[in-house]
Image: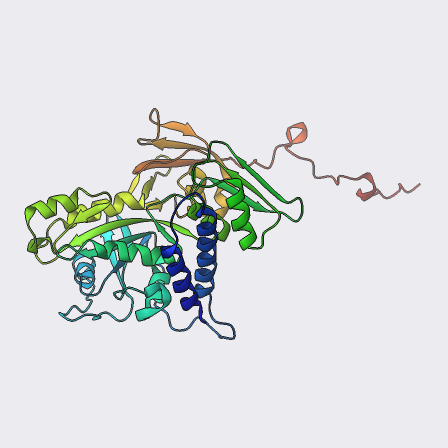
Length: 399
């Protein structure tokens, strides 16, 4: 029996099992088994020389956005309209067969937009080259899930389920659970608040399913069984996702209003070019890019090319800003002058730990090098050797 058949068999058993206090331990073990099998499914087969043919393209720009959706929902048209890169669009499904990159120039930054082939139900099991598509989306900063506004709401649930099956968690934060494997000492279980979804016995059973018998577990929030399994697996990626509803020109205004009010959703029409500017601004907000302008001493700030920072790519502190310019700059910094919304007054003297905001102006003041020279007792340093034994002995006087 293959891995996919085993997963389907366990899912069928979970569907048959009633959910109550008596069966929660059994269901927890089944969830752990499914998570283990899905991890095995993502691993490359043994004996293979490489990962095979993929869609990966070189990272470019200050951020990366992936377009994911079913076939024929308007992903290629959206890429062409936002970036100007031509991506073939036609009235039949699977027009796009590989990854097509484009560049969005927005707010003095360059954002890479990837048009991926449409994925279908069962993509997490490898149908329709679904694994390669999802692997590329894992390397992006945010995901734009393009949906057809005229189709049923079930498409959104199917795509979310397929992405979660391969370890992508959309619009979620990592659970506050501390987990560390140990060599000896058994399992230590603690929590800082009352737990309603899991208990000590259930955690022991899940850990034994993973053959972990020595570990330290601390719950800092009322997490679920799935959250605990995600922490044990340790290969989950938590990403932001914006749901883009295309083709709003073919539905009524009441449906458009309902879709627009859903969380993390934007409604657009590529055909009539409606609301594309709102999509770009929402994408900018979710990426959290911070533009920092440099100011040389005694000169005007340079507003042409900002240094772009983000929390996902390094951080937004003054130290990260210095490292972005050059790795050796941090040790030469004496202090930094900051103008902008992050400063309490203009200019503010800041250290390396100061967090910068968007459109701040920064001037770096370096430490002064010690001047060599001076004469007599005003010499900055002696030229004599440090050890007496290394000093040159004078020639004896001739008598």
